[in-house]
Length: 113
Image (cartoon, rainbow, N blue to C red; front, side):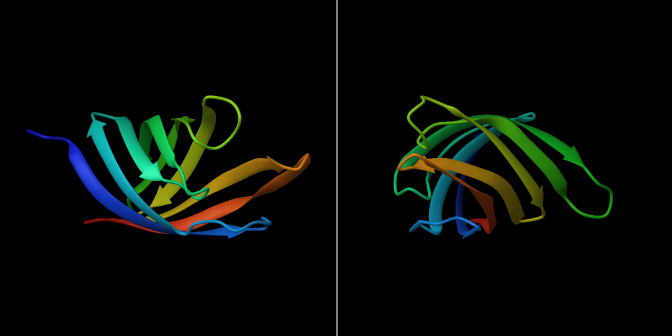
């Protein structure tokens, strides 16, 4: 039994200055409640991640993904939090550009191919 899933996500950055990629091809493997994956990120680079998935909710498929991701800052890994309802997601975002802090939210839609 394989665990590989191929997905694509479309995102929009809210309250953030910058030119961000909005299309994210994505491959992941889920084993129990642990997720490992790679995707083409908003900065036009590859990001690798590992996260725990916490499922909850009764009427909708709701979950929170908590973990670490590469490819977003000068540090090797960055914490990640992503809230999902069905195929929709929202995640806080932060970066430093030319010494200025840039905070916002990323919202999007993700589906399996």
